[in-house]
Length: 253
Ligand code: G
Ligand code: G
Ligand code: MN
Ligand code: NA
Image (tube, rainbow, N blue to C red):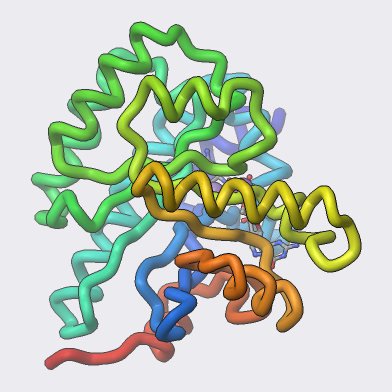
């Protein structure tokens, strides 16, 4: 069986699962959202990380059905949490460029929102700058996605080619500072300066900013000193299965 066929079969047999990593508001320490991260529960290989199958799914186009499954599962789970009485929060879903350039992305998102009854304000799509997309199409698609009432975040901010150009062209709700900048924040003054500058820019532009890959208290203190809004990383929590992350949520009813 080729990897491509294995992925196809895994989709049919529902071997994929979503893990969720908490996103924390720095000022209060509360969980304000989660990022959905796909894993493959392989019957013999165990839990396979996305790095091992997402690139092949992207090459073969299987990312489109897989991505749709991810989106539906994440939206449904988020709505279930709300119905269970947990404080409503956003779920962030990673989008591949292959999905983004698909004609029917907007319809797919719309249909899944209707199907799962999730309030659009609680869905965020993470796009990366490495997405080699046609600018006119991107403007149109992002505009239509925004009209649905969902949020858009630029993932891996700082590593792409056209960061600032994107900010100029699109209405973006949030920037996620790439973990490669956060990692050496305490030892590399360039990285510290870059992170501080991205945070300051986000403040000026009036958009949210989240730092990912936060692993220790020193990094956290630095981000706090720069008034970074939100953080995500192993210092707080690793990505967790739905039933485990639930233990961390607060009930409102
Ligand atoms: O979960 P982990 O930290 O191992 O993720 C590794 C990479 O896989 C990250 O770049 C992440 O964005 C990507 N990834 C995880 N889940 C998804 C998904 O559902 N869709 C896409 N396109 N990428 C994902
Ligand atoms: O590209 P994207 O931002 O979607 O990737 C998220 C990836 O980062 C996931 O693979 C997740 O497991 C990983 N991740 C999340 N928090 C941390 C962290 O604190 N340290 C490291 N090294 N990786 C992290
Ligand atoms: Mn991401
Ligand atoms: Na990232």
